[in-house]
Length: 165
Length: 425
Ligand code: SF4
Image (cartoon, rainbow over all chains, first blue to last red; front, side):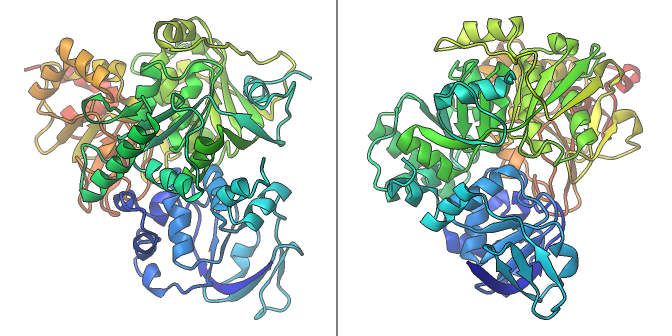
């Protein structure tokens, strides 16, 4: 799986309240959530993000609440994957359970600029930045069980297809 | 090599003799919980998967607490989805209206969680129940849907960090200060993916309420779960309330720990977490002069009867400073009733407080106490992220109920001892 897309940069500690504020949690409509995604971090983001874009984050991305509204909002906004220095535990789980690919890379953040196009090659364990041919960043491989989850399209398809039983 | 209490509970529920940190196991779940922010998504996923019946109608608990009493039409719709589902599946433990309280205070209080349980909740503060010597962790709605379908879930066995608490806490120092100081020391990622096991002689001086508060906030350091090995205090609590037989696990003396941290709680002052991270902690004596617009006493962290008693002790005969809005929310109907019987609600009313029904409301900026731009709140809750209690340009400071009461009276963040010079009315 190679994911190629334009980069949006966010810093450390992008918690779930920033990804989708609690005031919108009474809705579960993906389109509505996408319209408010990242609102308190960057109020203009939702109107500028395009399908296939990639978010590059800092430390502890997705900390805070267990709200699946966060990966839903990101996915509905068209985010193809998130690459961060690290992820909070529940967000990590939720992302795979929902079929949103996420990757841990401590080094990418400092090498890319917003608007750069990057290529995440999960199988090869590397990220390329075509505009900076010298720059190639290692990315941690996805554990086999998570890979199965992603391949199935998330936890529920994984279970209903009987793979998990 | 022995096992930790966390490993033992996971092994027992996975049907294995032993498990090791880092492996992924499929484990049986004793209790699963969803609330009005997360259960509707789980119910939708359950239906989408074509599932018909929940794994065990007595082991699924549904609580309407986040946006209740229903804040708006959406909130009402979410609770209706849960109500209809509870009826259809004949789920006895569906809580709403006058029976509902904040889930993490309600479940232990109602005896639904006992020592040795494996509990998952679609809410990050599900880790609270670790105070009882259970393995309890927060998951997402899809995980909850999977449990509703199968009664099982995948878990990566976490490494355990032992936290040895030494000494004896001084006056006005509570579980809240212990956990805030720990988060301050190790940071918001300090225990990421790990279990925190609390031991040491100071644990004997922590009440059940203190332990719930500590376990509640382990997720603020990134931990998967927090656990207190059961002792006399635990046994007394679960035998008085539990609806099933508890199992008391202990870590083996030769269990392996990823790290061992020590903390002397006798040296601790009440702590205050500054915006916008729970790890931005300072002792209250070094806070400086910070004027506060709103004080909130409540939540799954500090909305128990013990917390209200502490606050009432300081507020009795005193008033919130002019310009300070004081909001008190008993966490459950039982806490509310006890506070009423003990005359605490009158103390709060006399102090000028608004008394909220049991709800998450203000804690997550849902309703019942939202902040405007530029306003500062001191809250007994667990998170002070940007916009947590309202406008993104508002600020939240976290502290224990005694600091909250003193702050309400003086209108600035204050040590409870500072009230000594403030005359009672
Ligand atoms: S009181 Fe606050 S932290 Fe606790 S469950 Fe409710 S919203 Fe979450």
